[in-house]
Image 1 (cartoon, rainbow, N blue to C red):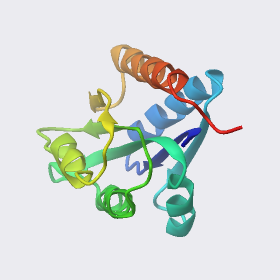
Image 2 (cartoon, helix red, strand yellow):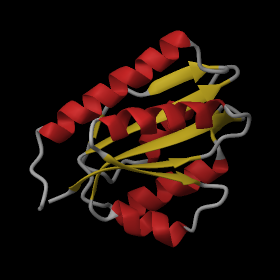
Image 3 (cartoon, rainbow, N blue to C red):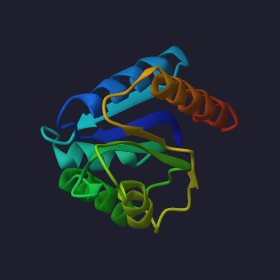
Amino acid sequence: EVKNEVIIPFVSMHGSTRKMVDFLVDLLLREDITVKPFNLSRTDLGELATSLVDAATVIIATPAVLAGPHPMAVYAAYLVNALRPKLKFASAIISYGWGSKTLEGIKGMLGNLKVEFLEPVVVRGYPKEEDFKSLERLAGEIAEKHRGLTFPR
């Protein structure tokens, strides 16, 4: 069994990833989902590892760095993959400035997980109105998927 929780390890260099994470957190809280964002530049990785144990969903949020995920996001994805928690769903929030293989990198690093990968939100530059609509779609999909699960009391 998993808990009605979403874990969001994130890193933000210029504020766009943080803006999207904050927006998504608010949406998920309105759906009565427990959300635990972890700012990877300040997070105790033991706390992140512990939080993953019973969570239903993980969302890796990262800007692109040299066309791939930020090194801190790589480390978080590696940790998730190595721990192989009972997650049911995974996704990503990615911001980039030019060509990026970030999504492929994140998906490739989560290969040990037996999860359904939900459609990610990939944004060029600072998020715009349509990007926030994509985050609303992701939050709705997560809420719907979680409603289909049985959670411990």
